[in-house]
Amino acid sequence: MMSYLKQAFCKLLSFIHLSSRPKLTLHAEPTTLTFLDPKTGERHSTRLDTIISRCKSLTDYYTPTWWLASGHLATIYCTLADFSYDSCDYSRRLIQVPDGGSLALDFTPKITESDPIDSRPILVVLHGLTGGSHESYVVDILSKITKPKDPKNPDGPGLGWRGCVVNFRGCAGAPVTSKKLYHGGYTDDLRGHYYLSSSYLQLVYSRAMAKNLQRVVTRNRAAFEKTDVDFEALFENPNQTLYEFDSLATRVLGGFKSTEAYYRYASADQYALGVAVPLLSLSSIDDPIIPATSIPRSLAAENPNLVFATTEHGGHLGWWSGLFRPRRWVSKPVCEFLREVERADPSPRKHAETKPAQRDGKIPEIGDEMVTVVGREDVGFAEVATGAVESSGPQADDGLIKGL
Image (cartoon, rainbow, N blue to C red; front, side, top):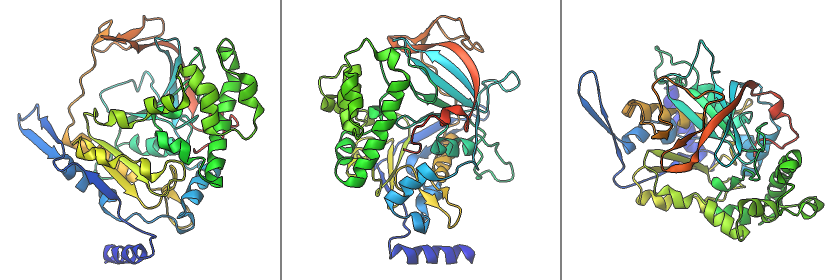
């Protein structure tokens, strides 16, 4: 009865655009996951559209917190709210990559002698521009997928996985040890940068993100002193936009001929057709930072592994639900999708061939030689340090505007 009343209420709210089901875009013949049970020898096949149908949050109504139903309000709330109700404790592995740069990998639950790396799945999380493992949207997802499975509630939020956040160069305490600076172009679309200059509020977001990047450069300025970056021009404008920062710093450090060339190179669209595993893309139509026109939904018609889900509300990394104590809705479809993909094919993934060759049970340690992928000497790592980090630790309190 309560479920029926809830559906009726949501349908009523849909007439005033305060509730709606996510819009799904898939291939006409979605990919099929096949798993051969090693115990019984039985072959199990599950189509991607069947997996999606089992994700309740993707087929049910999403009703945003009514006083955060504006994309701008939902986005601003991400930067102002108190998220202390969620937390993660990490163990950090600092690695060096072939070009001399450094990345900080934060694992949760912590890697210890009593809880080492094992066969459980690992969710790799890439943060947003100048973000890190401390960001509320990162902690929200990881606090749920790392929760132990509940035998009495197999469809509950706990997946029993491990999480790994890749903190990029200069972010969340990761040092800058090369002349390259992390940039957001690896995830942002070309059109989004121009969109950020289309209105006053968009300019506010653009300037906030540029200010974050300026602070990252300031903290690591010594690493860039012998580059062609014009530091006087970079810091003389207190109202610098993201496009202006990219023109003065990112373009130069990345070796691009123009800022537009950098954006074209970094756009995710060109890689989407090569995705070979099920991929769920979640976007909000009212996102004030990434425009809805940049969502490449048409690519689903060409790649059967792609699923695009869009909601009317959510803002940028918000998706708040609940009346007086808003919580992120987005973690529900994410956890449901990951659970159903694992159920459809729980077989372990094959490791890439490496040099030196990976030995069973042997994990690279500090002092070992760099491990690279065979045929890709530019892809590899060597562990250089370890440590412990809390999601509310000092890397979260560095003067940066969080949540963007």
